[in-house]
Length: 458
Image (cartoon, rainbow, N blue to C red):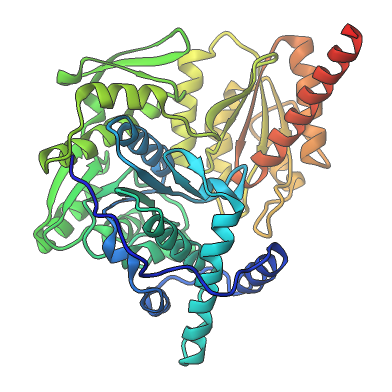
């Protein structure tokens, strides 16, 4: 196994510890700057922190859809191979600590306060030298680098934010592999209003003389851009060929398919689209294996079987069956449609939908609403949220039974009651920003039921 050396005290803990109130105040203050693409401030900040990112072995993952799933699958495979794996992903769905994980375990509050204290001091030094205050994503990314460095991670799986070339994570210079998942229209305000411009932004994570894996794009224009970027940079590009998967089926709670010499693969992560994500992960770790990392076929199969990624067609309640998915753009909607067609053709499906105003929600509704039996719309808790009333008006163009709810709680409770009555499947999808609230309602309901059952038994 290729291992990282145990590191010393460089980039050590800040002398002044933050308490939780101080941390919240600091994070609230820097959120005011919003999202600013570019690497100048990030370079200044990481210089103040000893450029610890240059001492990490990193797999860098960009793309429009599937990034988080590919990160989770790759990390799970590497854990099976005995690696100490750090994983940095965004956005957060259920718990802010899930953004930073080592071997599947989220960062503790104490560790986070320690690294944040160091990052805050770094920010103050940047400002004192005339630099700009880093953005929230830059601070979170710097904290990830510092945390994984201090914790002696052998390998880090690093997910970009919305972009690629000018994303704060792209400060890294020599990743082990640069991975590009599916590319589609999203974040046009920041990345460009054409698929080609977005593909070029994503391909910006590919480095000179590096190795890259990309899910083979269906669009020839996107393929040309990826291949041209690799040609100019002297990088070697490998395609993950989702078309090579065959004999796909649901069996015993697993999504099963066959893939070349690997034979049968079994996925716990639901959703037909997870097949292409798993193949992307397989081809990524094959490159590592070619570089001397000891990763067996068994490690790959068991890693994929055990991989979990909440919020991606994940089950949060069995009776009635309640699913959540982060589909929020046209490409993700098409993939979610395929999943529903494959496994839920004879079911009544109740939708809960909440989206952000800058998404192409009209196209998403057009694709998915024909499969719905009943539709609830909500307003996510986000400054970028589309009002549920506006979403309901749009949804009524494609469905005859749409209700706008005054809160996420109301939608979840009404859907649960109707789902139990009609033995229907419930699916909450759209913006990840409201799924945590949905899960909180379900957890509260489950805990209340268990308390009532316990009282009856006594």
